[in-house]
Image 1 (tube, rainbow, N blue to C red):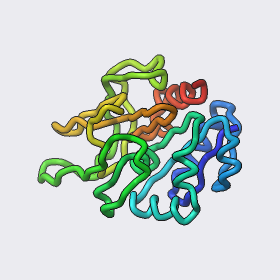
Image 2 (image 1 turned 60 degrees about the horizontal axis):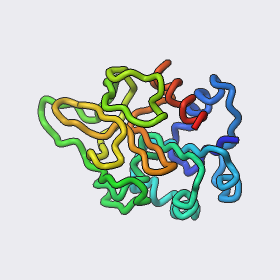
Image 3 (image 1 turned 120 degrees about the vertical axis):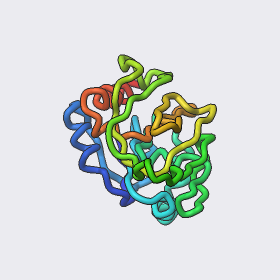
Length: 195
């Protein structure tokens, strides 16, 4: 069974649809016992890092997530809150990934938020089995994770290289939305479910 952590940060329907297309079974939950028992855990999210961390704290889920030994996949804000800290709200995060979340610099010729399809490269780990460098995935974000030892994929936006995906032990994170990334994203989710 797959547990989707319900911490009121949206994006649930798209994730459920992606799992349904793959024939997976899931439960939407904020119950620690259910999360601990799950074979895989998904932490999706859209919105604000400070609000996401406040919600996780109020639900008593921070230590629950840190203690998980099953594969965990954070998506977008779900990945960001697993980093050290975030400039969005100047908030301490879960400190799983050795990365800091920063805002894209404001320049007249660069649109923020970064919305749309971009290629991924420098792919590492089984999460990207069958995915070729240069494949495109879908992004919607104004903040990004810097390159760090946990970086397992990268993307350029304008002239900035940032972490497209992170991994530390059993924890994985994608800045992009695999559930909205067509066949490539579906393959990434399938790879996660097969870990």
